[in-house]
Length: 476
Image (cartoon, rainbow, N blue to C red; front, side, top):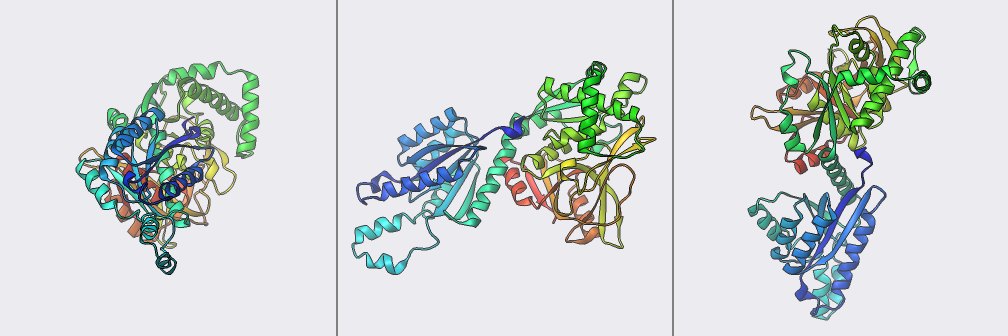
């Protein structure tokens, strides 16, 4: 699945060839810094394509073509010293990927006393030029802005914790863009009748995110369920007891139904190579389909925990929000307002259907429900709360101009009583208080569903929005 794909990072140091003959050792010093940066960036999930030190317009054109051949997801433009904008523009134009300008000095400051003791003016100038990253930044920004090429900046010290925290956020943001751009999103069924807030333009989803939309049939899932044999059911039942806290009042026949549908879901996902799924279907009048759709919750919860987020009620925008949180390692569980507790100043949030069991505060309970409220059928459901600690809410919202934006809020999942109704259910507190949060969140016009992930990750989400050309608003 796409979460396992190695990120492809193009790295280019930029400089000015006129300096090399004037200042002995400067080029080698800067090339060493580029090499060090390439090695620091490289890991099992990040492949770095080092384009070396680009110092002429001719080399810039070649590097741009090489970036296309390497199929990089992002170009890190490391400003090692002064460089002409004519050295940058051809590279960026030909690469055609997001650009992050690394305005990074080798140290926090020049040692002025040691510098002035060098005595030799030429040697002094060569040493100073190695600290000259900030010098061409306005020139580069000017040209890229006039060329209408978006760019982003990291300003700081090369080997510094703050710098690398920001680099890691950009890498995570690039991973979001790359993952959505190659993801296959399955759509099964239809919208929940009357939910105007969640309806969206499917073509626009593919245009904005590059995501492929694969329409799959409920009938196909029901047929796959009918073909599941007893051994597969038995194995899945064992997995249920490992992954869930199955309550003693869960009927064996309901567990078997859920196991059969879970195995069929896995086969459907594999057959269509899906990276996410949004579904809703009543199944009324067709016994096989009603049986399938009323036994889907455990299987969809397992998929969500395996980096294949599943959203009910055909919530396309929200499954993309769940996928974004999943890609950056925050989880991403389906949720909505349940109620407000004005005594404790918290918001109760949760949802029926799938839950992200990997971010649960404790082992997720499986409970039998005699009725699925607002839906057809009965069966098993999951009950969980999100781990206590920092959380981030994320909504992929649409404005009145049919443009997408990310709306985020950072808060805390806190302990306390919940509604034990067989659904996901958490208590969240936010810095503005319950009233202030709800007012500010609603003012952004999101759909009533959103995704919740663990940790405070709004900084990464803001960068992901910038890379994808989306609006961004952080409520708190």
